[in-house]
Length: 297
Length: 298
Image (cartoon, each protein chain N blue to C red):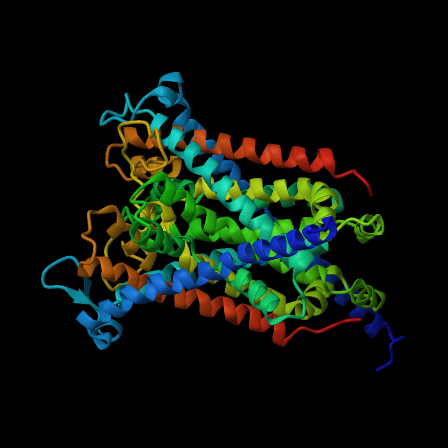
């Protein structure tokens, strides 16, 4: 075919137009696909605020649950969540950070043990939350006799978020420049002195950011807590880790599954409280990341 | 007499042991999961034949006469997985292509965190939204839709896992070297052609494993289906009907007062073990896809 012929040029020009049009159409399609998620988020938040705002007041925050939607409050769930989350941090953070330090600073990266740990952690990250609930039921509730308590819930959630904390801490520790370690060793510091006084302080903002994100995941989990016996209706405040408990997502689930429509609005108000707490946690994480990320680069 | 040096050396060794002990906890967790699920499952299969469990079609473990055919739960779970994949895979892949190939840096910086928020919203919230917003709309469109139905839950699960599909696919596409894109552009390709004929094919194994992981996540999702999909373990293939998934069954039993050691109690573990094996195999497949097809463009 003669490419210089008039027909050939026309053909190429037409083809080019088609290809460009196709590109534009595709651009539109992938843009819309992206926007579906964004619009969904906006609609979801609007719906929840419209439903829940009317029920949200001081009484709601300071009252016990009730059979009457107008009197129902979120206090026990809020206090329960705070208990569980605090304990979860206390349990999961040392184990997670310790594991990450071991993996990054101590373990022989060619050893079978190291490989086993890494593969195992990757697998744990993919285990459904409810399966952790079964583990909690069997080990913490039954075997260790913690019962349907805050402690059982906190241990269960700790194991659930452990992979996230380990991986985030590993990333933070990896980001510490090797020159700092070498400088510390050159000054005669031991391994642990280097890790505890050079590596960790440098890595802590990253570790905390990861830990906060992990904790905010734990805060929203309902399924594992249901398995270990968390309740959607608790009429008193816990005063020890061995008490029975409710938690925000459990309370929200309880309200959502009630037939009276008034409870839907109460559930929406509960969701607002939960979302505000999650937003606060995330804001803290972003703040820490921004405040400390400029250091020593 | 112990010198300082010796003491320090001894402390160092202790710390190393302590840290490796902490690291072992993650392995104990895995062993604990396997022990918890399979010890009770073993007892369960001493009372119920494994043949009945896997080959019969009726599920009513807490009603007399008891039936232990797990298929209604498996089909319910599969409907949620397929439905949510039908939502999340095209939207997630579309978002990934947009973010990695089309969007300006500034736009990307705004939209990506917004999409990530979708992954951070607790699943009870999605469940609430599915029941009180998506379901009424479905019922307006198709009046025969049940209040609790698989379709509504599938849509919510699908939206929830969009960020998972999008960010894993985008990572895979970002790993495609820019020289390949530039080569294609230099030959006169449009962005559409670069995206669909160069980038996506080169990133296919990563994208494929993202899809598999998304399905695995959908199978394990609990609260959305417990709230919006219903609690009726009846074999159906109609997404507008009420169903029960494996996870939905487990939650439902846990919420009731089930006697420890009873057959209903063990049933939860048997279903949990099946769920664990399913998600575990899918995760292995996802990792295998990436490992097997890892091409290095160096």
